[in-house]
Picture 1 (cartoon, rainbow, N blue to C red):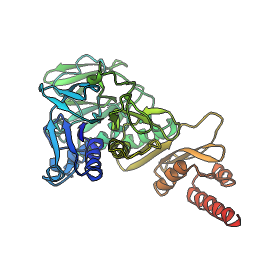
Picture 2 (picture 1 turned 30 degrees about the vertical axis):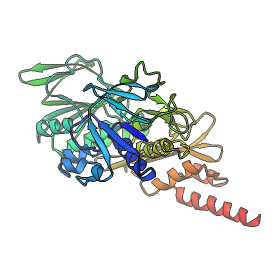
Picture 3 (picture 1 turned 120 degrees about the vertical axis):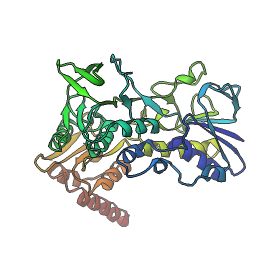
Picture 4 (picture 1 turned 135 degrees about the vertical axis):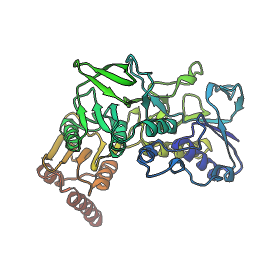
Length: 420
């Protein structure tokens, strides 16, 4: 059996390892379009603050890991796929045959239509090469503008602040991390950053970037112009599906799959940021560009590629973010559901916040800021859909009683089962 994986990120690497474990005799080719060994983008902030060197970003630390597993790494880029012919064309002109194909091509940074975005000194922070460029130019005391305060932007923010740069963050939405936090929590994160000496401009857009006497001049929609030595664009990502045009493989925001992560062609699967997989909370299919989902996808797709029928139950929408020491989390349907109830507790001065979202007596979503003790319990309650019964009313009055409610509800279930 010839297995080919396009994409050497976490989803692709875990899939390759799972294939080798499940089918020791198969052929495995792992195709990646960067010169470095497979690495984790989530490690780039640690590289920027010199906590690790480049080798520290690598997903596997042994130099012979892939060779030892007889996984062939091909450094090239996919140009097109013919699923019926079971062939993959590479940009080098080479043709690769496959029996089963996994698309794990990830995503790429969105480049908003801003004049001057291609100027020298403007970078994304997505590849190891981007990290090298930023580390070389964003030195202590330099003026750095970060476009975007979403999840990726806030991870980069902390690394830049630790480098000692003069940092200004520009976010077009009315709060920080708008796809993870509501207005209360998002603005608390903003105030935290301001208190730490980071300038944050929300509800603000960059209109143009110009060269000005060897520096960059960033024009904002409020008429202000800011000087910068480095501009970093972190304005979102989009799935890498362009090479599938004309292949017949169905795509939407990513590659459309079923519960086995199988695409519209039975011999082609998808995993990770490029995969439009099932969402646990909604039952709908969406792209979840987070590493835990990529790892889960990679394992499940590989099992199905080997003929081990494995159903994907859906990924819990889960984000954990550390912004300069302030930890924020969001799970599931954190924005609430129609007809549901919610509980909220705010301690603005202490930078503590918790919001719980219920559907009947089941916790379906949560947000927390500055509260880390019950992170695992929140996820567990959402994922198990545990009926809280009377404990929901306790949480509506005091949402910090999460552990007490969890223990009370589970003991009640055990007691009822014993009576049966």
